Amino acid sequence: MLGGVSKAFGDLRVLTDIDLSVGAGQRVGIIGLNGAGKTTLFHVISGLEPPTRGRVVLFGREVTRTSPSGRAALGLSRTFQVTLLYPRLTVRENVEVALLGSTYRRYRLRLWRPLRTHGDLRTRSRELLETFGLWPLANVEVRHLSYGHQRQLEITLAIAVDPALLLLDEPTAGLSVAEMAAMRRLLASLPRHLTVLVVEHHLEVIFELVERVLVLHQGSIIMDGPPSAVRTDRQVQDLYFGAHAAAQVARQTGGGVLNADRRDEWTKGQADRREEWNRGH
Image: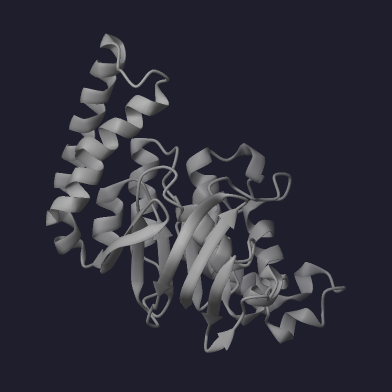
């Protein structure tokens, strides 16, 4: 997939010599602190950012200079940290638009016909909404959905185009506890033949969803292994709970020293993070 990929913005190097190979049907999680380069990595894979150096290969074809739409036509689909939906269309209409915009030839040549004439399209949209638990909301305009349902719909749209590779960028970001539970059920129900790469800050979600975890730090992959190995790795634990993470938080507070309120916030955050880490076991 990636061979010797580096990405820099001027003098700022964001990715350094990334080599990544992912097998068909594999589910890979990507974790790391803020600024590690996770979203930039997705941008390079999906074509939104060209690499400064290196090659990108998808489905046996070099796509280093191929446009995002060209990569989508090959079978890549992606979600983002913010939802990209049609707010004044219904849930079902959003799915039907995704189906019409897919690479299905049987739809491509019939764009000018009314949606009601697409019996197979209507059937497929209902199947997708039922599969991912959104059928009761089929006739609701997207602008009236909760944020959690919008995130679920975005993943449904990504699946609607029948991809071979799905990139999920923080699918649980900003969700409530109840919405998080619904999203985890949706992620668990993704088709098994689908290759999935997921960036996620909630470690318990990563550990239950994937069979392989990449740890990205300062633009480099510092570990690549099964969740059980990543959880027990001392370097990774230090990154999340030790001096590296503490120093980063201190820098972000502006003086390199944590005041009492910040220190309490940091301590609680570390305790919460460790509890989440342990729940992923």
